[in-house]
Length: 170
Image (cartoon, rainbow, N blue to C red; front, side):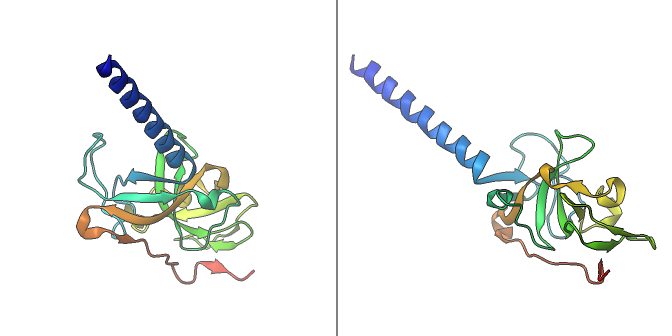
């Protein structure tokens, strides 16, 4: 009888912990691995999609910014791609709604529509970003990257930086 009570107590505590963990991950913060090289040198991406692989950076993503879409130029964000919403991308936020931006390697100047933003990878040679699919809806943004939490030698805050000369004063 004592073993049954202990097992039931352990099960209740495990389920409670799991529910709290899911709630925190869904509403407040989550950890995510970085894949690919589009954000190099800011992040070191893993080339494998094997779950549990710790070869690349793991980032901390805060979700408080989603409540009122509080973002700043130069933030690094994580979002669902417009072409495949099961896939997550990590990119730098370049322009916000209403901004005028000069499209890289082009003379085109574009105004970012309301409810959208412009994102680019830090490594443009290997980045699929707004230069390919245009401004993305803010509704696809899943959070702001604040820290690298793995590997131990790279733990630290993610710097907000903005490429110069990208936003036009129109």
